[in-house]
Image (tube, rainbow, N blue to C red; front, side, top):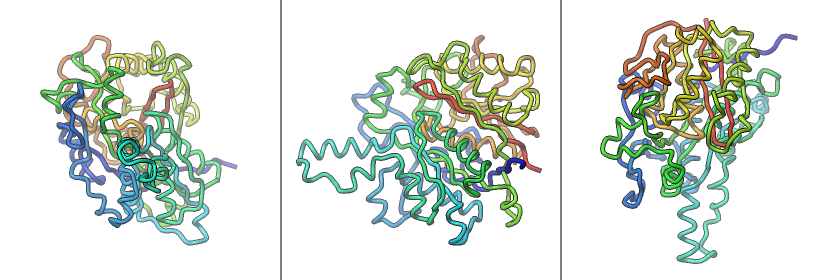
Length: 413
């Protein structure tokens, strides 16, 4: 029995540079940065005062006010991205088919904002004033839970929580679920809303964030010699994965085919990547091996590319180790230069961008690339998009705890 093929038929994006596919993609190709001074809280005591926020967010565009009041911002983003993905796919199903429709959506940290607000309530007003919605607001699996309830999805329902690899792991595991016959359609991706005092303060304490407060739009600069840390972002990226025959039968528009998935652990350090990106190497090799694709077939990599010194050097080294001489023919860009780092949602938006690059024949750039770093010596599609037809493309993610994920896509004809 041959393995079932899986394609991407819908994309839902809530990002710092746009909402929806067209708005977001246009911003990426224009090299637009989503970084700006933080508006969601008072940053006076913080070392970093800017982030990539979702601009002018209005949850009532996607849901009733009564519902929005019971949801943390990260769940609001997930519901909105789920709506956009379903609409983009033109997706419908019968009651009989509902058991074959699932939702895998994760987050790295969950309802941090709600926790902060509730601690204040606890201290100032006492435990009796804690909202009955507090627990459902903070737990990560309410993101897929709300989507499932909204649409009556009765198939696999799960949250993968693997730090900044979350979105990519969710997509890869959804791919496996369809491939092995557990579902025919999956909502898959990640969501995050941690632009908050605890979120920014915590990553500042790790010395992970850029402090280029005087020029936020130039702060996220992956692979550039003058990078000084990542820029926190927020939002959600959710894809519709669908079994190929089902998609073709209903005449669906297909962005790309999912053909490989890799996952690995560094077994090394809680925050630092393993030397030479050894864990990331194994992850990319697994995705290629499962797809039966040789390294020289890959034309583009959407990099994890965080704009931190160690990550960018190590990802470059890992790419050279996996691709050998072909690494010099690869294009690799980091869209985090524009969106910032969406943590648990990063893989969701970045696999989406990779699919769009294949479908539309344009590679998004790495902006703010001004000063080459001798330790980062690949083609990072600097500053301007590039029109080129690519047959295979990878999207890489890595997270605290030494977790890695790679999703391999193929251009669909």
